[in-house]
Amino acid sequence: MQSEQAADDGLNNVRGNNVSQQSSRKRFVIGIGKWKPDETDLNTLLCKFETYASALEVRGKMKAWELTRCLEGAALELVQTPSEEERLDYEAIKKILQHRFRCTEGYYRKLFKSAKTRAGESRTSLIDRIKMYLKN
Image 1 (cartoon, rainbow, N blue to C red):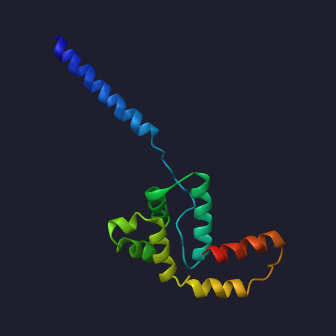
Image 2 (cartoon, rainbow, N blue to C red; image 1 turned 90 degrees about the horizontal axis):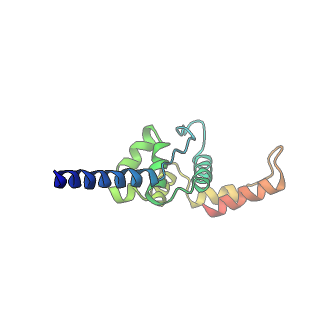
């Protein structure tokens, strides 16, 4: 009888640890919606995504997974073709998308060279946009 109770107590402790481990894991939901390439360019998606991910402190494999959740159609199919290791690497997914949607080094160079202040845009915003082109 005592051994059964001890076993039950041990099981409850194990269950309790699992519950506490699960509750200590962060759950992220970056709610930027699904990306529609015909409506928004990849730059906008990545900039918005990285801002949210930074604010929520999303790192590593979770960052890659959250980005994948924002994709649909051809972009999602494209991300499903690499190995599992690459699918869980944010930078690898980003490079695959940039290559497919022609956001290459030359693309960013062209944006950089042709950057001008847009209507209603402050100089600070222009500088931030140019820095984004250089970063990518």
